Length: 310
Length: 304
Image 1 (cartoon, rainbow over the protein chains, first blue to last red):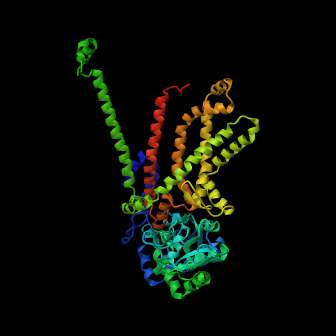
Image 2 (tube, rainbow over the protein chains, first blue to last red):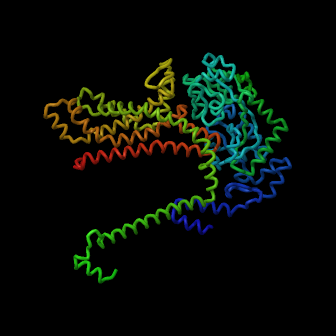
Image 3 (cartoon, one colour):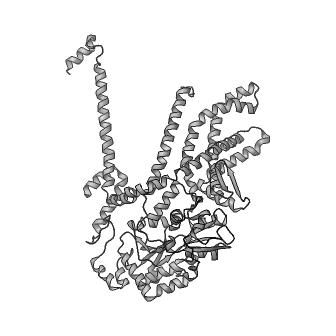
């Protein structure tokens, strides 16, 4: 096989490096019997570690499974936004996701200097082509399609969709979902919010899909759109801190089609660390620490009237 | 075939039977067949080898699931195709203004009267600026910046556009017109300057004014030369309307990337590429056809 590949690689020199690398990687690692990965190049589960996962000790579970031995590399957005990360400084533990990440890290047995932070774009991360970190968190919604290319921990938060606009703007009288049809709506592209607009609200005017929430905010501020659909905490934060004179008109409960977004830690596909992070979240939930973190950082950001379906 | 035959062929003319191919023709035919066979074998070997190399790589199953997923393609293609009209419409709405404004800039740049120096300077700065700034930045700055001024309010209706004065469907195309007209102006200018100086001198010596010279002598000759490069720019415009998606406009590319982000599967982008190709390949053929026809019509007269 190796000879064949090398022979062909001589024909097309460009691809030589890629093939050679893959070959070396798979011969260096031991493929565990239980692993059913698409490509044989994934890092693998050492048999001794799998037993630890059932014991409830996340630190033992994570041992030897991180990118670099002895440290944990966590990724978030660039920049990272409040209330998830305050001052774009995730290492401080200030902000919801920053606090969750550090708590998970502690459960996994990493503290202080052993925790490293890197930045990635949302796109690269969900595409599954990112290998710079152990796990990534920037409000990634867990869904089945994403699970084909990446792995998720169990959720650490559930967020509803919400509608945000100017207090005196065209959205001020919205009380039910169908009231939104007449508005010019915008959302960040590639989010469940955009899908919610297209599939559930189905507005009469063309909706807008922006590169980021920052662009959507600018468009709202410019009166280019009447309202933003976003997840509730982000919406509440925008109205309270970022754009004066706006408010969240309401949130969509699950029965209005606004299925709650469950956010999970995102890991590379079939990363053996996945079960350890889920275990860590389960432990944090059981101890009440996750609830405390959520209340501390998100308490203010989860109160809004509920909109009815019709 | 023996040496004897060949020798006879050279010496005696009667070996050529009317209606039968000569030996030279047979030889040429053989050569052609041989060349064709070699071409086929080489093509099959090259592409077959490449295909084998790619499909036998360890990452191929993953690539196939993520980029060439038949199920996703079937599901996403019609959804994305539904937005094709948005791209075509934006193209049709911007192209005429780009040509018009580009010509105006080129004419400004070509003025000779010293009184009109400010126009010349403006045109030079304009083309330098808009050719120098990435189009996507122009779109961002114009599309989000100008509406922020809050100078205009209410609704407008114009040539199939309609909506609020702040609408990205207004400012996006305007940004494209600003950026593209700088390129188009340069194409026009090179066309105008490509007309030999003797034409201008001849026209002026016949008593035509500068304007008359431009109108009746220079522009008609220049127009013919600039058509192929202009078509090239328009083709590229057809693809660049996708850049307006940064203003929130949902068109083919934006819809495809949204699905990609949501699903983590790149197949919708492949679907979008297919849609763009289906649009641009016929356009490319049309440009080629036109260019060839023009070359035939003008014969070799362009040489020299």
